[in-house]
Image (tube, rainbow over all chains, first blue to last red; front, side, top):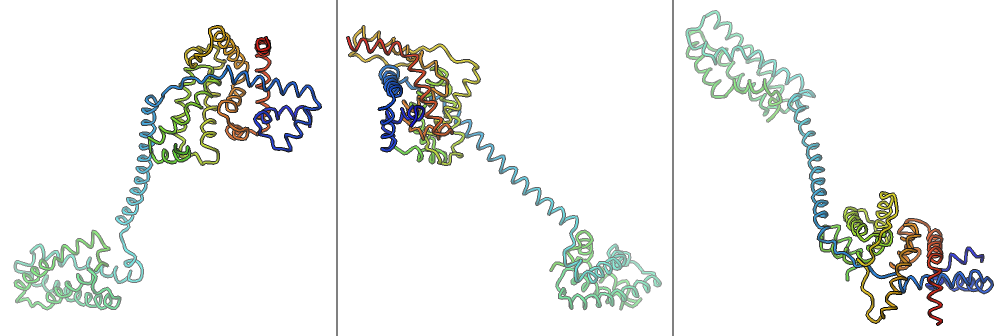
Length: 238
Length: 189
């Protein structure tokens, strides 16, 4: 052991913190080195002096009353921070929901409309589009007065053709297991109405068109057609 | 008395009473360290509050790798060193009478004066130490931490602690040498 090593052991040697092997080596060095031996004695004397005279315990201030308001402030900040985090998280979720809802509103066609039954459902829409002038004509009361025989004939034939188309569409929808959808029900109602209209004779035109108007109103046909225009995926729902 | 680690755990869950207990259990040692390092009662009191605010803010980050005391002393030493750096110069004035406990009653008037003088000399000698030397000296001889604990507190190796401690005591010896000789002479007479 050299002098540097022994000097770094002074503190532990004084406090009895050296293990037996270190203690033995340390004492052996002091026995042969008067400089280290004297320095070790002086080290102990200095610590003894400081301990005896220089270490009066200062009166410790009671800081709790001053500390509390600052701790409250930290707690408040932590709470606000947590609320802000939750707020941001909720805002994020809300934004995602809005985007999803927006996609739903602006791209409302359900899978069923554009996938497998796409053609037939589009056919339903086309059918409703073709049907609308006739339906509007009856609904607006143009059929309540004495109908023009030529026009009546034309409308009757057109209604008969639409009834046939409605029948075909209904069969297809039934095959596709969509007979209970709103679209299928509307087509079925129109089929019935058009069928009756197509079979009206000129003699019973006035009364017959009045009955057809009643049926359209009873079945809310015009409202349902408007609904499908505004929200086409209504077609596919049961 | 509850273990300090339990107090930390409870305080972490928002138990203000536990934190108050933690303050009560540790403020004496911390304040002593800060007075030693800052050489100012007022600065030490200010920094003591700052230390507990830091401790409160960082309760969640204490992982229990060091002891609670070491962790708090580390915050104390670092805050005091920051304060010293901020001041740019060492605090010189020290109103000892404001924070030292009264003298023992069994000490006579002449001896009382002598003890006061010795105390003043020791305080002067402490001025010769750097803040880090004072911190290590105080942690060792007032807080009674092991060298390993001091190393952990200050995040330095044990060899450096031993070396700084030896240097600190050697400086004190140099400053206190004359008064020590005087005491030895009085004792032998």
